[in-house]
Image (tube, rainbow, N blue to C red):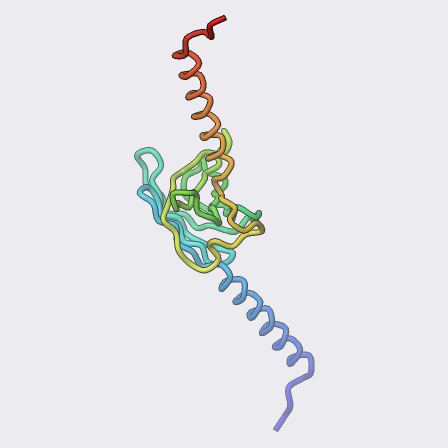
Length: 160
């Protein structure tokens, strides 16, 4: 019986270890985001998107484009020509929605709040951080300013 060449064995072991690392990355993120206008599925470095934009429907393949502590970013490989990046919240907002954002040549726009589940959701660099915290804070400040203005306009001038 003839033994395999040592280089063959090294190549086989190297390929096996890469597959194990890729499997670990895939297992770290397996999520579904389901909304009224779109359905998105992320599995490790790839994913799919089925979504409405205007009056048209699209199905696109997605490739990971990085992440930060609040979002996973995916680049569409096909689909509508205007979308150049999707962002998926890693944390829910106060209402329990996981926001999906869409970027085109005009910049970032909220696509929709979704229900989401899977491996990797709720994990980020900051415990309890919301992917939508800044937007919520801006809305709260705007509402408070309106209330103060209403009270100021309704209050009689102070007596002297």
